Every structure is written in C-alpha cells, then in structure tokens.
Image 1 (tube, rainbow, N blue to C red):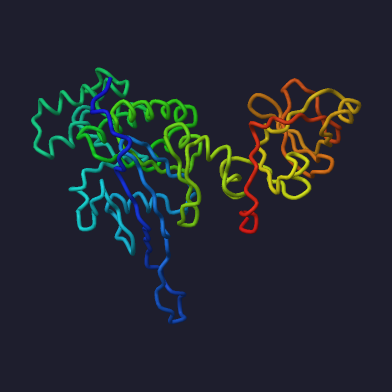
Image 2 (cartoon, one colour):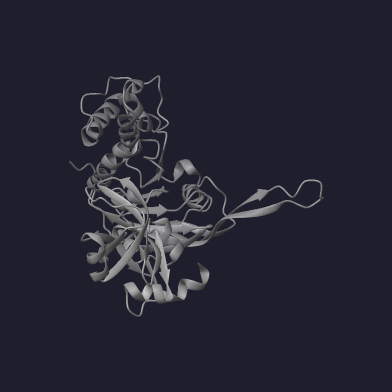
Length: 361
C-alpha cells in the first residue's frame, strides 16, 4: 500500500551547510570565570535526497540529536544554513516548516483513542473529523494495526504504541520526518522486528526522513545512507554496506562492533601490506581439534578465556605473531583455558582501515 507520490530521488530535499550549534555552559565556580560555550554541532554539512532515509549514528554526546533539533528549527544556529529544496529556512518557524518529529517515547495522548491520536495533526490544520478518520484507518492498515482505531493507546503494547506514533507522524504527509531514537525504548527482539517494518513504511509512503540512533543495527536496517558523528563532527557517510565494510577510522570501527584493531606487523599477519585491520569476533573461527591441528593451521593461538555466547563460544586468544584478539567457536567444542587451537579467517568480518587515520586513534 502506498499513500503518497513516488519521490524524485535526483532532487536534494534537505541540505545542511556548515552547521554549528553551541550552548552556554557555566564557568568554574568561585573563580569568577565567564560562561563559556560548548560546541554540540561543529561545521556539519550533509544532504538528503527526496524520498531518502538518512540515519545519523553516534554515541551519546556525539551531537546527533542536537543536529536533528537544529534541522527542525528547535535549536538556534551559530552558523550555517538548513535548506529545503534550496530555500533557506532561516526565520521559518517550526510549525511552518512542514516537518514532523517522532520521539522514542511516542508522546501519544493517553486520554484519546488510537484513531484520534493519529488524526490529531490533521484536526489542528482544519481537516474534518471524517477526513481524519479515513486517514487514520489507512495508516493503521499501513502500520499493521487494522481495526484498533477505537481502542485507547494505553491498551496497546509498547511496540504497537510506536506504530501508532509513526502513523500519527505520517498523518499530515510531512515534507520531512525526523525520528529521534524511535525504537530505543523497546526490547532488542521487538526493536529488530520493527526496524524492518519502519523501513518498509517509509519507502511505501515515499517519505524523506532523518533518523538519529546510537544503535548501528537499527541504523543499517532502516536507512538508505548512514552518517557517523563524533564530538559534534560528521566523521563518515555512505551506504550501510560502505560504512560497515570500510570504517574510516579505528574509533568508528570500534563503535560499529569491531572488537580488535591490529596495526603494523600484527595487521600484516591478517592482510599483507595493511597498516591497520579491524576484526569482529567472527573474523577468527576455531577449526580442527587439539595441538596437532593447531600447529598445522595458518593461524595458531592459545586460549585465554572462554564464555558462552549466542550460537557458540566467545574466546579471547593470543595468536602467534599477532597478539590478543577475539575469536569464536562452535557451541559443542570442548575448549579450555590454555588450549592450543587453530583458526581460520572469515574475511567478511574484517575491515582494512585507511593508514592516514592512524595518528588520530
């Protein structure tokens, strides 16, 4: 089901140019120091095509939510511009930008029915009750909750409430949908399930969207492109596959779940000529049995620790000529501390990092 026109993805819907946002912070007490400014967003530029979903990924304090609020018009800019289809939005109040926001807690009205919650944005712009009801029914079908319009939102589960919140955000057909950690209040299983639904709904409605999240799985599942932020700056941008396979620095690799970063001779053991290599635990897999197999393997290691994990065993090992790294093994393997094991390399779980970034990590 599609509720909107097919977007023209050759057009830049949103342009952010050299955006800077700062906040006043207190000077040190009893020193007479003047108040300083803390920079939250520092010289950030990005573009979002019409109908595209951009995920802004970063840890707490990276500036991602401040950037989202600045685009919405909720934070004053120190410098830079936010443009919609080339028109500068400076001076355009929040309620006239045609944008919609969805937050992690949904912010639904508990005293209203599901349908009334969804129709609320239409009612405040003058739509009739019948128009609101029809739109609510169509969106409930879209988000997988047909027939619940007359129920109270308090009677719904957390995941169902977030579906209603998404439907309400889409009700007035916003030019841009801004999502701030939309699934973070849900448990992991439900979050994973809803992420795919959110992506489907945004694509079916042709909605241009920017989502901020600290969860890389969520960002990769929902977004067409991902931008990684740190300390207020935009560090890397690309498709989920590009960012995942080629993180631009060791710090980005660690944030994305690569647990071991090797440099110099240790990296060359994995990838000849590489200055730096990032590995996920699944990059090194125990193979064979016993000391004899270990010594015959391309990579031999000594086990430092063993812990059960989803689908197998999680190991910390010392690899000859490489040092300490993580590895995995099948759940039925009898592996103990001090054992010698052989390892095979799964290249889909490693990334070669650019050497020019090494001095900064």
